[in-house]
Length: 377
Length: 251
Image (cartoon, rainbow over all chains, first blue to last red):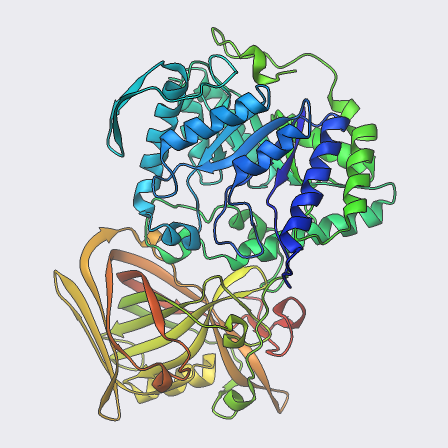
């Protein structure tokens, strides 16, 4: 199993001149520790205008700082918005390549399309188009990285032949992923040979069905890049403590706050009559876990909170479902002290991580080679 | 921290409907529903909803208009002004006020579900190129809104969150301010969406002069069968819904 940290960079009110700097400093300290402890990934979201919930609008810059302060942890966009009103695919390819170079070939490129009304309307993006534009982005970005000079005449954008520079260190190119929240996106991922970056905690049975479907379809995929990334990662809340009650209490603080903050954002699905957004992103699973109209998220089966044994049991359950790894939301809105977060990470690395870091890597699809630089165990 | 409502409900309680809880529901077949959404720009989002609820980011008002040719109360049209909100983590719409052209139905809606409803003349007309709605009160227009250039979507694409109605609820002989959660079920026959067009809106007449539309969001028009369900939950308007929600029916 692989483990990562998932960074939203949420900044609670009241905001002072120092609030955002402190959140970024804390996050970087967590990343440095994660690097020392053997975590596999740090992922940074791209969000715009989402007050308090996420102040991470320049993820490549944050990830550059992560890369500069670490030596082995992989740095991932989790995920970059493939919406032309936000940025051109040329700029995504260029900036990602720079990040790959300065990180020494440690980039993972997660892709997505935004799911909130404030973001889509803030950039005047057409929600009906985002699935289509995402598709074109993921088809052209690997070509931009691999071809010496690139030209394109597409539906969303066109460009004359140009050298898109620099090129990433990882050859043929960095691993690519897609955020999976809407039903059916796991199929999109499989058909394009993209890794599944699960961003929505769900039930075991729902998840198992999705993973099985993904595994089946990716066997016959037509990859958008030069190789298939067939990993499936899920997301969970991490709070690991010798005192199990304290671990659960603190974990639930993070999970509840995350649910509350996420729920205050207007999803595209909620206000736009469009089949382009069949689900509300992260929110349905969280809402399903609340017991009555007033409840925040409650502890649910498979949550990685409590003693090291509790956390290990939950991870084992997710491993049995078929996931290759888990990215952890370990802090949100600074609701638990930084010292607790760091201690939780240390205990997890000492007591839990080794139980899942043994054994051979899962076989991959016949005829498909994973890149040496992809950090596969 | 999550934004929490801070609306002073005391001035609103006086004019709130008296609700006597009971096992009742209202089914209406073949209802036309126009919903038009606009973002509002206000300095203090928290002050728009009671402390029980959380505002959304950003706040959005909805004009939700029903028209039925038949019902247990006869033909009617009902126009509501609602504001997006949250009860804990769940999407809800806080009712600012409503207008209805059927007095008997208005009484029923007020006493059973806590609708803050006044008489009004409501026109809802569907054309192939647009749907027009106007609401008049005391001879003056207080809303004129349209959906322009309709295109078909599925009923699954349209959402009407449960209403949250500030009312006075009588139980065991005592009356207390409560927010009544109004759940409705919809069986869609068809649905269109289109471009919203707001020609006239008097927010003060609807009950909150701060709700000035700023950015058009969406418009939909649907035909469906609708059931307003028995009240299942009420909550204390003064404390967060996570603490003050009470189940009043097992249905």
